[in-house]
Amino acid sequence: MRECQIIVFELNNGKFGVDALNVMEIETCSSIITAEDMPSLIKGTIDLRGESVPIVSLNKRFDLCNDNDENAKSIIVTRIGSETVGFAVNQILGLVKPEEKDIDPAPQIIVRAGIKYISGIIKLEDELVSIIDFNALLSENEINSMKENSATR
Image 1 (cartoon, one colour):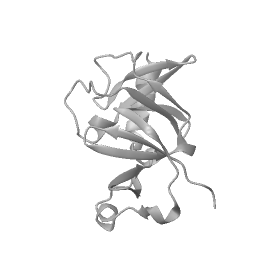
Image 2 (tube, helix red, strand yellow):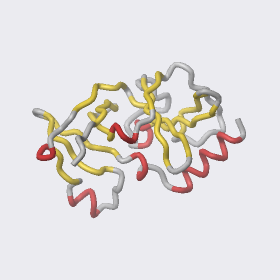
Image 3 (cartoon, helix red, strand yellow):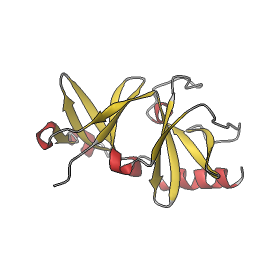
Image 4 (cartoon, helix red, strand yellow):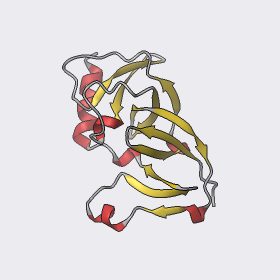
């Protein structure tokens, strides 16, 4: 059994995590290029070593913020299929290595509601952290829309 490592981050309403194996790198939100015709979910794009990478606002994705999403300070860069995508988060809180007994599967009410992007829940001291599966977070249409918008930039 492999040792699980979770990158914990903050959004406007709480703490979330992502498996560190699914993260390529972490960037700052300082150089995001915006355009008016991007889908509302997209905060903008960044140039990552010559590649135009769309940045998805997780606060907007989860309906946690106003239109300007000014609290996002960090970008978690990952791959979804063949696409490189960044997810804007308020801040990175650190890396945790939970024991297997501290990780629960997603609650049945979430599973029954069709929410596929929460892969589990970690119990950390006195709080819960939802583990997000970035591969299940975006629909195929959203990914295709990002491809089209990135290709025109």
